[in-house]
Picture 1 (spheres, helix red, strand yellow):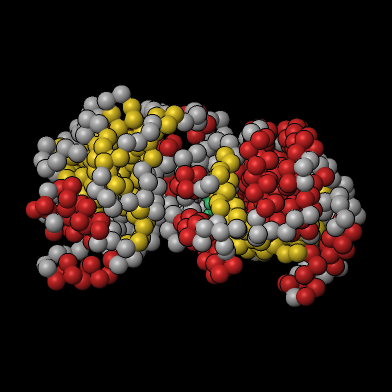
Picture 2: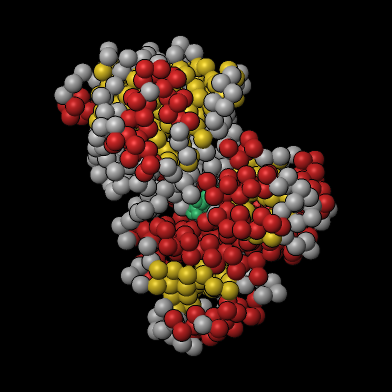
Length: 593
Ligand code: F6R
């Protein structure tokens, strides 16, 4: 949430470089943006409301009317938390005397008290943000020297932050974090700092991760400090294996459809894991007194799907909680519990908090993540990388199916049938490869054209495909903005069926398993009340008004069933002239609570 990117090095176009890098982080926030750069003893700032992706960088010089040559710059693409979407609220923010500028991702919880205190000392605020207090606080302590002033200001903050600071009188770029990600890229005589790797992937793949309560000072080299002990820290340089193309749209019109299409390969990559490690993790699950699957949004629905997979494949009960709800269960967590955190980004604040709660109780933590080196990856006892590659569309697609694939494999490992699970998933991957072709997309497009103007739609599923109905509703809501809800088919008659009237589309996910007859009956109940039934199933059925065929893949049915709904959601978004990659009000990687 909010993209941060900074450069310090020998190139003299730092401001433009930062804007271009920020464009690659736009999925993290896209209501407004800004850039600050340092020339001699001055910091210049340019801010705009709107998407940074639409800004023509060649117009910066003309717009600013000052020399823009600089070797140090930082920028920010915002997802508003405190204060509306205005130029004044966009980052960077100056200190009162304009000698300091900062960008920030996170929330300063005690900003109101600090603001009052600073106002009492004569500081005037130009924005409604929580961030501006930090700039003024650093100015307040400036007599200590920049580094000490920043440390002192940070020590007064409550909440989460990733902060970058430029000082007019200092050639160093300074950054610190608590709870929000910051990654340092090391190039040839140049450094980058970003909230996510794709910002600098075209320049370097050598990265260093800043941990909580740490500061980095970038000059000719990068020096790391622990803010609690004030001691210097040595950082390991990690070489990441993403290539720059994997973070680009290429021939596709949007990242969302590119990432949906990549599911031809991502399942195979996901299941290619160290088997000894999988069996060890399976043992941890077996020996745990209580396993809790934790995730948010789509990842939360993956957790719920996994609870059915564990029950069905391994006859094992596991608990499920959304990250934000997990703290309410903490009384049940002990040092014999196992928490399995599922997260694409590995940075979601609610899931991270759940992990913190679990760790305080002495529980073991396994993270299933897509971003190597992310906070969750680093604080967990075990982690499994789903290897889906960069997921940039806000709506999760390829990461979702890769997570389900890993959890299916774990369920088989738990039942000592790892090889059987692998064979099933390899077969599923090959069936997805055949399924995802232009004819298939065209068939779904015809349906999207038919239903594009509806006000509401519903999705029903049963058993392991009930959470898939919930996930389907999230996909439809977030990119098409059509009111969509998912239900367990059997629950309809207990209330929601009152919503059905003539022509309302209802997607029925019908797997070829023990749930088939009942979910077909539920679809009939909807049809009898005028509903328009869209069947997602390996086989046709008379109750379907529109049938989207999916391959027959047994226990892996959740993976293939969600894919046509991802395509439908995408196509509805495009037909309704929404940007599927950057849906309104949302941002990728929710690093605030
Ligand atoms: C929806 C979506 C979100 C995320 C959620 C958790 O398509 O992507 O609901 O699943 O914000 O994010 P991660 O997986 O990064 O923890």
